[in-house]
Image (tube, rainbow, N blue to C red):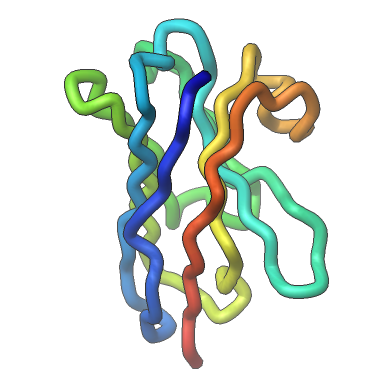
Length: 124
């Protein structure tokens, strides 16, 4: 059973930056697409970003494109989400996820593993 543990959330002012980390309990990158979702208060969980094992393929939600960057460190079994130019509407609980394909990740369907989430609050 793979466990995903997020960290790095916190309170930041609008325009600031934050880096989230997702540590996997075992090497999952070669088997899955890794990605991030978020869920704001009163809203549904939504896709944010994803990448494949080699990081040759990445995908982003339009709302974060150009501001967020997903990356991974295979040696550390860790996926990162670098968030810049943060806006109050980025406030949410951010979840790490593993899926079998990019389409599954983008659709939020057939997610194999979920982390428990880390809260990001962006103040105006």
